[in-house]
Length: 313
Ligand SMILES: NC(=O)c1ccc[n+]([C@@H]2O[C@H](COP(=O)([O-])OP(=O)(O)OC[C@H]3O[C@@H](n4cnc5c(N)ncnc54)[C@H](OP(=O)(O)O)[C@@H]3O)[C@@H](O)[C@H]2O)c1
Figure (cartoon, rainbow, N blue to C red):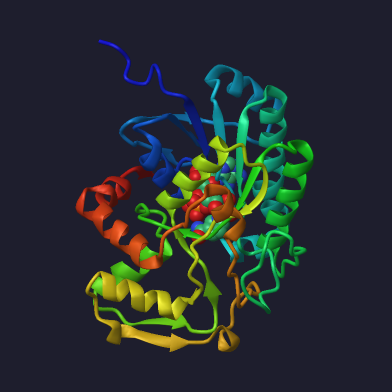
């Protein structure tokens, strides 16, 4: 029997057990030969292969790339807990900046197309809709480590593509997304408090993946904001989710970041302006309503249950 992957280009996703990589893999597995590069957790996902990557050692990583020979590497791995980064700056720098530099160096040396996933957490959050030109001004260790990653990645691989984003999608048993947290709690009849003074521009993970591949095909390089075009508060997003999934909005209470006590400081406004990406793509990136309809469709067609069981502890 012929190998169905034989004529497909190769895509290596780091952070293979993470929220973004799993959804990215699902979005791309029909067209790409997807390898999920994992760290501590192991993954089982139909239509993909899984391999343990050594991202800490650039020589060993290079040898692994020579064997895997991907056409495109998308780097999603990182320490995404803002509070854990705040508690352990060295760990944050290692997981978010050093590893990113290693992958950028190893892919640059082999001329492999490289996409680095950055964040919307790079600014003070005292204004809205930050563009790519705005100087970064992170206010916590997570943001500082991701800003350092961008700087190192750009220096190591000037032709690479850096995507600043904020996304949601179905997660797994050990990693809930913001939308999972909302849906599961509301389905369980639990009241929630959501900040009405924190703003963001979320995009569905699949839309992010599709747009990223389009940007790669168009030869984009440098920094792009790849987010949804709608700026809304966490509270407003919760209401949109409850409406789309027919869940009780009465369970959602208003809260304020300005009154909360959290370990790491958080920017109040993380919204990004995605017009540069939209211009290069030649089309819009969809609306929150579209994303939520797609999220529902994904659940109806088995994505949620498939991902739920995809990662072992
Ligand atoms: N979630 C969001 O809304 C959001 C927003 C903006 C930007 N981002 C960025 O998007 C990317 C993906 O986020 P995500 O939410 O999908 O992440 P996630 O679900 O937290 O997954 C992170 C992945 O990174 C791996 N990892 C962590 N530390 C590592 C290390 N030291 N060495 C190798 N692998 C390591 C984890 O593997 P193990 O669990 O096995 O360690 C896991 O597979 C990150 O770069 C993040 O900064 C996320």
